[in-house]
Length: 70
Image: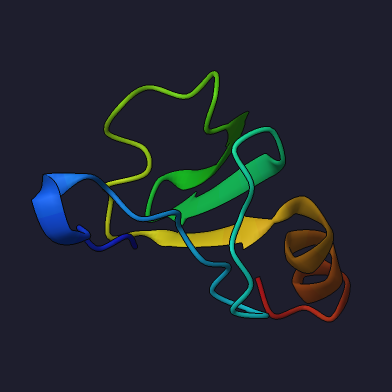
């Protein structure tokens, strides 16, 4: 989901639907084989942003779920 920038600091994750950066205080929806999880990066566990699972803005996740794509 996120790549590391120079110096080893993680880059901000991007939404798997729209491609925009997911802000630190925005709701982050992570889609895993076990279901979905919602948190903000500010409150999330440190491994959430480093996961390879698809991540979405809440609005993008709701849009996809409304279209039966989620």
